[in-house]
Image 1 (cartoon, helix red, strand yellow):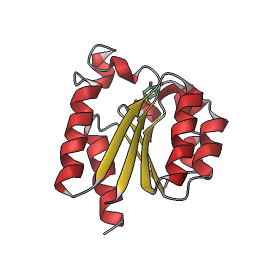
Image 2: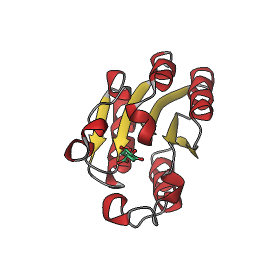
Image 3: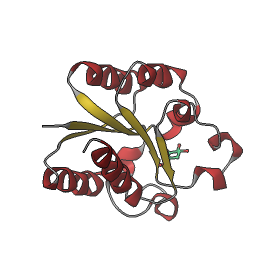
Length: 145
Ligand code: DQA
């Protein structure tokens, strides 16, 4: 069974109550449940994880190198704009990487316009809300068919 890992970075555990005018009303659990259903229908195994800690996200990315994970979908949240360490970890992963942002980061403060992760990502989706994760999952599953 093919495997995909979905990683959510800091503060995304607050989705639904965190600035809903920017990030929407769906909770992280709502988003993950939808992804589980979508993956199961296609016969894929999926793991969805969230952390507020950079090192934990890196440990999970490193784990994905060894356990046959075909693709990583990642919303690194604020670490997008700061983390060379997450970029380095993704550079050591050989599968597909899709970067997702709920909001259109390019319409926001200039510090959100730079993404270290985009230097590695095969695709980037921003501004589609939770639909962005579903589009990313479709894209990785289609690429492996
Ligand atoms: C975000 C955008 C980031 O700039 C921000 O720090 C987040 C969420 C998004 O999904 O739109 O926490 O990645």
